[in-house]
Length: 185
Image (cartoon, rainbow, N blue to C red; front, side, top):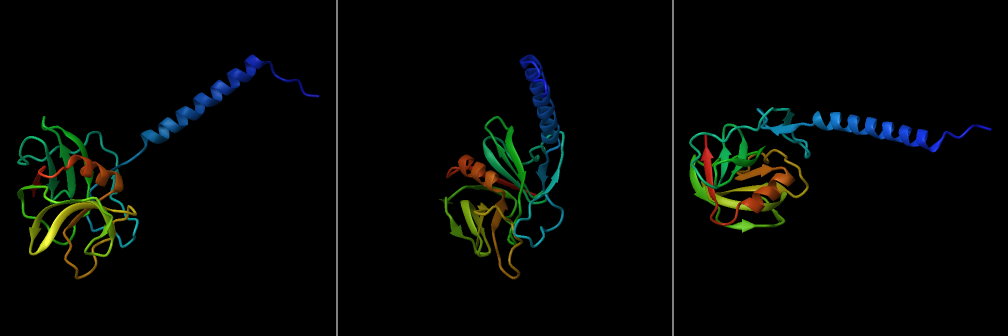
């Protein structure tokens, strides 16, 4: 018969094991990634996501985007910032633009549609915040219900600026009707 270790040894062994597991998980979490705008159009995969990168600090709010509480959308960086009244971004994330880009300028959120509804590219979307129309195409922030970001259908004009599901929920909460939207190059 085997000798059973004393309870104190069991507790010490379990504690050491638990600490080791927490350290491993913390190291794995620290190696986590943050999205960054892709330099090329996403692949045709229905589950394409922005290329991950690890950055020391979030991208700075672009110069020339105004002041005060606003949503800032950079055409060149393919990125959105949610900026509070103190001109500090509370969140920034990469987006996938449609085929119709808004002109640089200042707009306001007009209509909001929680959805889900079908976008002009046939994708089910939610958290839609419309802020302008260009060439007869509504331009709006939204996220696909299933979290995907397929490239726009060939030959279809789309004004949807797509984002991940969590980012879409954040924009929905932040962007009430009348919220300023600054589009910069």
